[in-house]
Image 1 (cartoon, rainbow, N blue to C red):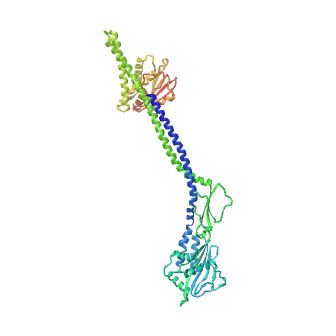
Image 2 (cartoon, rainbow, N blue to C red):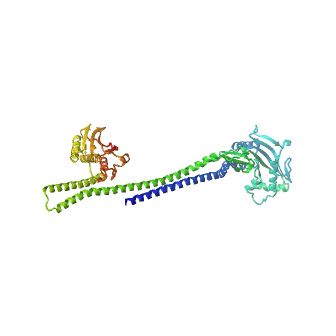
Image 3 (cartoon, helix red, strand yellow):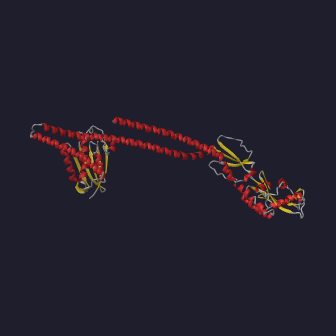
Length: 555
């Protein structure tokens, strides 16, 4: 049966080892896959996150395009140089990428205008042209006025947008109201690094404009229109790198830019800027070592989770193994206990049975024989009674089923009484003792006697015939009573000292083959704990053993 148990535990141990190897392989594989996933994820983000950088960087331009430009229409064509100067000052302050602004204070008339665009009775021409910008020392520079027509430089922007507006008016369906998108596409021009914008006329004005193209009206109307050309510098766009741990360097480059030197140590990507900046792009570049740090920072939390999961599995395997090991040891201890207890009971029972059979079968017994059989029966009954009492006392103490009886004990008399009782049983047992620091203290004499008896019996049992000696000391140290029991026995191997106070544990040696249940020292340990004390041991093989008991001093 024992062989089958050991074989079963070996199989379980092999299963646990196999399980740990398997989860270790899965752990390494999981780390490998997690790192590859992190690498692929970050590399994909390197390509895709540039859109977010672009969106963040061009937010000011979008605000300028969607909110600031339409403000021009609020003035309904009645902007002047002073108002435009304030408008442009705010513009240059809020939007650094606007480098300068050309303001055309224009008018639409029903008669030909000199230096204007004339189509039939419809004419579109500037009254004044001003330039505003951060490079101009004055608030504004007048580029043109009708008083000095020779200074006029009308330019492509004015001509292109004027022709676009005239063409739109010619094809205008006056039966419906034009949409804002339709007005914007026809009253503005978006070119490279430049937006030219004219304020939107009212629907009723557009109807009059169409009539002006066809005939001369009486009286001839004149309408004010404002046109502004915004010159934009893409290099003044403030780049907002929303992923600084991913993109090491972000800059604006021409669309045709291509680095002369390319290296496998760098990653790069690009995205084109929108609208008037479409000839330029955001260029992203990062060293691979820089991106690897981002990969690592993404990978480490995943690796930590995998490691925690792996640690939990290893801990579970360890707990299972420990449980199997404890069960195996408990099985062995209980098996030895049953065997030893059976032997302890079997010997006196056999002796009693033999003595009883001899008495029963004898025709007559002499007085000598009666005394001999009576002594044998009495001794064997005492052995059985002592064994039962020890088991009962152990159970009671373990379950706290008894109480301490506090009595004052004279230490010298108590030790001498113990010595006398043991020397009656073992005349070859040599005792010495000393008491210092106190003469008596309050304790339970029965439990203390059990401690002394068990340790004295151990000292006698585990000592060679020529070294059956025991020295007992009792000292009062710092309000604690310290007992020492020093013998000259065979000693205890260092590897087994941690187990000697365990129930059913027996040291395997020539003195302990039979006749021990493995409860003596475990019983002492429970007694000392019950008395709120401490017990320890130190030993050298073939030199001897010393047990030390520390109990509280109750005077």
